[in-house]
Length: 346
Image 1 (cartoon, rainbow, N blue to C red):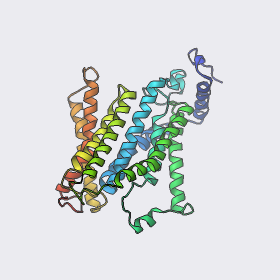
Image 2: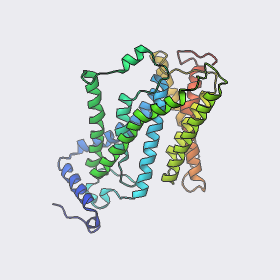
Image 3: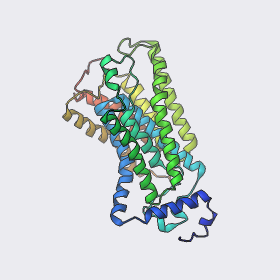
Image 4: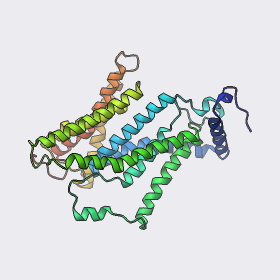
């Protein structure tokens, strides 16, 4: 057994055990597997999150994409905030030889694990609340656990987060306990998304007409204000616990602003499920390009942490990303006649 350094001897027994687990896993390492897992660990989580959210938001189901974006941003921000509270250093700090991937920041919990435990099950199983679902829609949403399709989804929702967690341990960037805590956090938010959010939406929409039924409906406007206020509260929570990092808080408030204050107040009724395959492809490309504009601008301006109001600039940068993705992009799709559905005035 490899001896611990003097610093590692000060570790908690759980973390000492974690380093030994990492070493055991790395006994089966080779350069090919290492390079594959380096690509997989990032592409399968944050790369997948951005792709799947854009796909749903602009090409499949706008509401589901919006909710996935909210949940992913909140999970990532909350994870980062918890890391800053615990301030646990990564395992390779105490055992440099186990570091197969260079990475900064704190260790506990694993952000990749929390995101994977949220996004894979949510993409496969989450269905947004519909005020008056049709009978056909209700029957189509019911899947028996005994069907091959349901079993395949369940397997994917379990195996993919497991593989992501394994990759983090294998690369030496997280303790096994970091991964476990990440899974718990992601699963908790997934369950809240599945069961709590639909109940809240049902309560909010039970007494209000839609905008199309009555554009001047006071209850509809009140519902919109409540939704925006909730987004602002969650954004504030992330700012409070994350402090230095405000990206996710900006995204959440930007998504809410784009959806509630821009798109819902426009004359357009965007339907992500409509349109041809080519129209959807063009929507995805245009939406992705638009959403990257604020990031590109801030990059070209070379705004970094040396600026006195750096946190404010970062917040505004990602606020703009969220607003463009959820609000301006769908309007542009409609104006370019890429929605394939009703673009009529509300």
